Amino acid sequence: MVKPQKTLNQQLLRYGLYVLLGVAALVYLLPLWVMLLTSLKDVEEIRSGTLLSLPGGINFDAWSKAWSGACTGSTCDGIAPFFANSFRIVIPAVLISTLVGALNGYVLSLWKFRGSEILFGAMLVGCFIPFQVILLPMARMLALLGLANTVTGLVLVHITYGIAFTTLFFRNFYVGLPKELIAAARLDGAGFFFIFRRVVLPLSTPIIVVCVIWQFTQIWNDFLFGVVFSGAQTQPVTVALNNLVNTSFGGKEYNVDMAAALIAALPTLLVYVLAGKYFVRGLTAGAVKG
Image 1 (cartoon, helix red, strand yellow):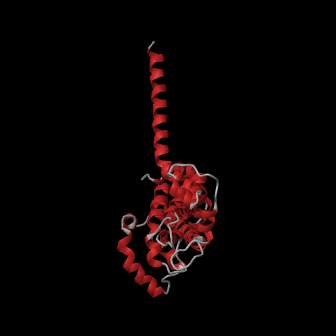
Image 2: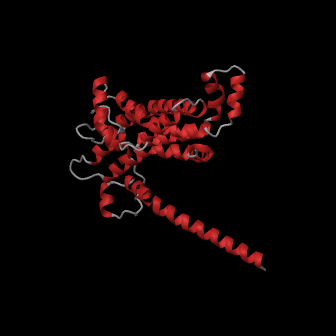
Image 3: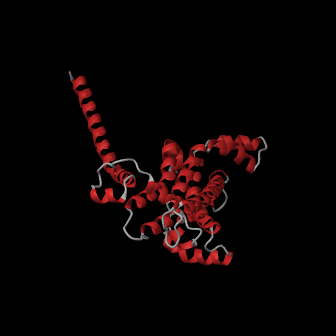
């Protein structure tokens, strides 16, 4: 008689946990739901209704205006040009910082040298330096290189700041790789880069996914570096979104603001929806060990 009672209690506990998680998810997603509803309404419907009232009809005019007609300061071309700028910044910055982090982690974990632990510790300091601390020296460096207010300059900033994180992730992942693989490759005469390309990288898919998602999210959502180091034509979408929200002619168009915010958030949402399970798998495979 004890076992059925114990099983019943476990089931009740499980269902209670599901209900609690469901309520938490609804509360967490409520702002997103309000944004979506508001973006599908016209201005008059927003003023006459409530936040949670359903739209009278599906209306994507606000989305169209946010994309190609909304004013972001002195220009009224929508957020489309700045959306493209963000991709021009994110793609090379993510690829380069991930590749350099993989190479650094490979060296610091599998090809240790005198002082490698000290060097690794020094690189970790970069993970804890606040963004604001490096603004002035970074601005000075970009000016000296002739990259101020350029997309290339922003790419360089994000690569520099992201290398510490990607090195940490790869180094801790590679520490868990079997040392026999590297030793066997050395005995077969394989060199440094051959082992990296043909042995280590094929085993690195989980941690590569972790780094790509991490870097993509950090860089795409960045506002501080974008507003400080970009020019009028090179601003990322986060800066343009801020300019759009703070620019209005006549009445405030909340539907356009919400549509623009959702458009700006779509890439990161898609990345997590499509690759979220691989992110968790990569973390449990060693990204935070060591």
